[in-house]
Amino acid sequence: MSGSINKVKSVTVIAVIAVVVLCVTIYMIHFNPNNRSGGGIPEESSAKSSSYINSETQSNTESTDPEGTTLEDNSVTETSTDVKSTTVKDPEEKTTTAVTATTADKTTTEKATTEKADNKTTAASKESTTAKGEYEYAYAGFNPSVADTSGKWNLLLVNRDYILPEDYTVKKATAAPGYNTEIDYRVAGPYTEMFNAAKKEGLTLVPLSGYRRVSTQKKNFENKIASYTKQGYSRAEATQLAAKSILPPGTSEHNAGLAMDICSLEERFDQTKEFRWLQEHAADYGFILRYTKEKQNITKIKYEPWHWRYVGKEAAKAMKASGQCLEEYLGYA
Ligand SMILES: [Zn+2]
Image (cartoon, rainbow, N blue to C red; front, side, top):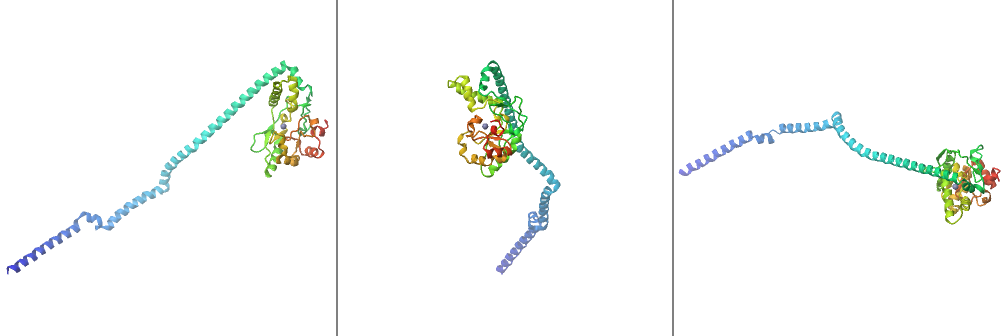
């Protein structure tokens, strides 16, 4: 009997333990705060979290909202504008500064050159005053008259016999796109047309030298004289020799802005495609080869395949057809 009593006791104990465990479990399920917020009330939790997400979304939405964005983006834009404008402004300012500096430099250089030239002119005129006879000797062989500027401007004859009047002025323009070389503004158009026509055939008629100041011509002439006196010639001899290759100041077509030295200053220029093109087409644009091999006795200038003079289409075509040089065409020879 004591065995069955023990059995009953054991079952009771187990039952009590089971009840206690059950109660604890129920309590745990219902009153544990972790379970409540965890999975106990999923909807609320999800509502909470969704509300949090919404508020995030909202704040995101707000930030993409026009006003918000405008504000926020303004600051961003402003910042980036600042950065951009700083980045953009700086180089511009630098460039502007650089350009200004360059311009200033140029101006300074030009001023200096002008001043130099002026000084030289002053010095030269002083020199020519003191050594007038000597300087006149430069012209002794050909004693130029003042050129007649009353006729057609494009047919102006300037050579060692006809010197430009001292007050002759040239209104200049750049001769061709991309080049600084200047020429009489009335010749700039025809030169550009000719330049463009040649360009279409792959040839570049580089405008090397157009308008030249009388003072520059004088400098070149004096340099040439000096190179002969260095070789032992007297000034008179040197001047006459110099005059064979360089025209005395005021007697060059470059001083009148009516001629252009094209591509090269070498005689072999006449072996180039550019020269052949000019021979064939230049007259159509009003230009002539001014100092030919054949007419050196009249022009008194050595053959210059690079020196092209504007005379206008009509005269150019007529001279091309007749083979006359300008002196002949105008009845001076
Ligand atoms: Zn020339």
